[in-house]
Length: 456
Image (cartoon, rainbow, N blue to C red; front, top):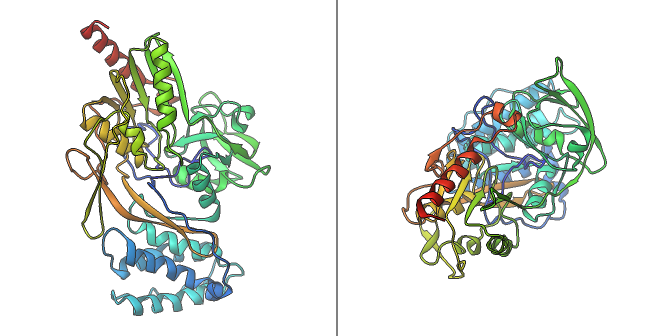
């Protein structure tokens, strides 16, 4: 599963959470696992006739033929029309009456094509009209694993999945308005003076305050060595402040570690990258052993997923089913533990929030259901499934949900539900701005209590 961490260090489709309370309520955040990204096809000029109607049809056909559940053509074309009409109004274009769709697949798309072509013919560049229509199809499904990727978003997704970083300014965002929850050390935002707790209200004078991280993504990320001006509200400033930042590739360490109170080994995993994280995880935990660590905190907060990594889960689960999913036909698939388990497994806490998504949720579910770890924080995102990402012919891509995950032991649906923590602890915007972390504090307290009980 790979998803939007607005990078800003942020992928295109990270969920927005409420500003006052960032953690307790999960919100959808597109993420994919084991995504397939097809090679960019040679541009076909026929695809761009009538404003690229054939590109829209490619997306339409993929959704009807491959989505995890059968779809009605009227549902997705209604969604396409809604955003198309909004975009056309923004460009002051004439919009015909909405076609009457009847769930006849072929007839419905021809009605849509005719109406779309009449709108696109009024525009000198119908690219954004086309994007709006395809995005509308995916948004009609309200499925975090099915989403549209513009060329910039597609590049960001691939870069994050491959562990090569993302061209942006080096912050993580959450909430509405987007709240800066992390500033990457020595990144462009850090050097420019952006702080944790800042609220982003505009990018290059365009208001983004109502749209959350996803709305900010396309405007903040961009080409390397170009400039972007962000307008922020800061608690100790009487008026919004503008900071101009030069975009650059930002690639923070994927796994970060430290030791807390001399005995607790803390490690944070940002993403499940191509090539896996199992080797680095094992090395980190082995190193903790040499430093006298007696318990672990594994921080999965804000981890949007990435590449499915059964080796990483198998470090903690010696045998049994560790990943379970079903496809469109209702067929179940199971992955078993590899047997390459750690020599020593310490008492562990996993930290989660409502931006823990996709493969990260699969990891948390396995450790929780097998009793390996105590989970502290907020319910995970519930965006748990497989996405097949393919290019549409104009450097944009469509991600389609093809499988959804179930609990490896319980067999219960995780998609739309997520993993509930053993101990619910929130972290508010005020906590973040004050650099307070009650979730981490609760994890430390739990492990200290365990150590006191066992005499470690």
